Image (cartoon, rainbow, N blue to C red):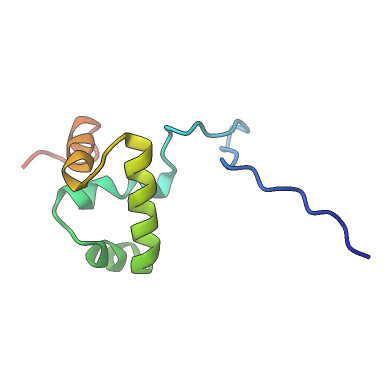
Length: 88
């Protein structure tokens, strides 16, 4: 007998039980703008975070969408403005 599966919510619950808003970055996505701002490639970021390059690419794209960036320069500015990377 098959049972109906409950659809997965788009934004996972946070530890406090509330759901994420579209603009909030997940803990993993917070790790992405810093290395991007330092000029690392997706391959380099993947090696540092022990992830596949495709997973990093997906995180980068989702992060861009959430922070309103269209490229690595925009993500770098966001990282600097939000303290995710120290200025050189």
